[in-house]
Image 1 (spheres, rainbow, N blue to C red):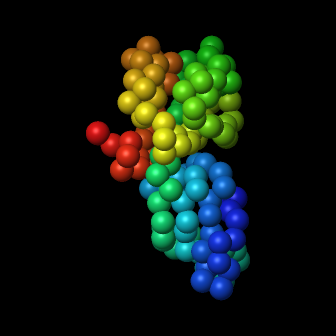
Image 2: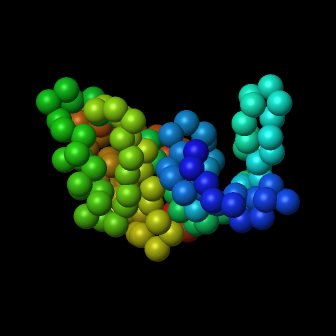
Length: 128
């Protein structure tokens, strides 16, 4: 994860990218992390402040679909995304975005067997 220091003495960091694997985390969350001797790196321990952003993980099911074309659909709705490879991406839904519109597009693409998705971390403002 990319993060910026909020308060190093207290172990507080702001997440600067979209989590690929950790559930219940989203971009801009403030987290507590500490150095783990076994891991030899800073390690997430808990979320201190939620940003209001949500994270959705998307996998392409249709081999003929270009990940950039799918990502562009969500960019036009105000979302950001980061691809892990040509079949999988993590999407950030900012707090002020109407998630119902994003969710409708996700479901539409899923119904057409283009993608599947997991709502890994839905902020309170995106739950209905």
